[in-house]
Length: 277
Image (cartoon, rainbow, N blue to C red; front, side):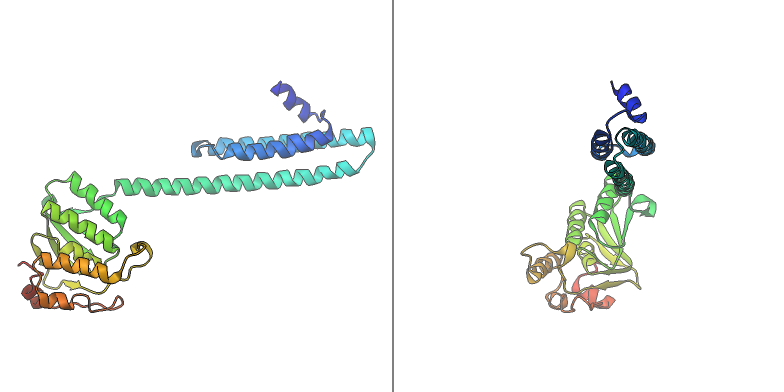
């Protein structure tokens, strides 16, 4: 029956009104719905199929129109043929463009997801040290966990970051503390990075390295409904205090505003207990 329907439409044997409403418009809308479940792997065959269907629709409709014009001599419905075919072609183009766009987004998302699931942080010192650098994001934390879980010989975290999400800094700090890792700064460690640094069992830094502290700005990804900046500062002040930091240092810890930064000298860090050696 399907084969007969395809052949009859191609030859223009169906009534023109039925052809316009059913074979041109309704069928195109149905194909648009079917397209939403077509997997990316079938993208090329689907596009070819869609274009073949469009040609079949157009040719059969013109033939049905010619037959209708010869039999009735009426021009009104015949001119509707052009409107319906233009709508059909436009819909086909929009559907294919949307299909390409959606699959492009899916492929990009898949690539990003794959990368996030496979990325690990670099190791050094014979596999005993992991380097945490760049923006403190949840993706960084995920990569950190993958790395240390896959390399049980890691005992030191080398930090190099301008900071990022406060809650990521806390999450890293918790893991570092639980695993008993030491922390080390080669170049610089600012803002949320210092939370991770302070969790180290032994805390060291290169002679030219810098630690930077300032107040938080809880917005965007850092923001949680009902969170108070002052309360969060107190939480991390307690975290620093627990790690043996002097009261005098704690009083200066969050004085600098978010757009500024306090970088104490090495001797101050040693005297305050920030550096353990």
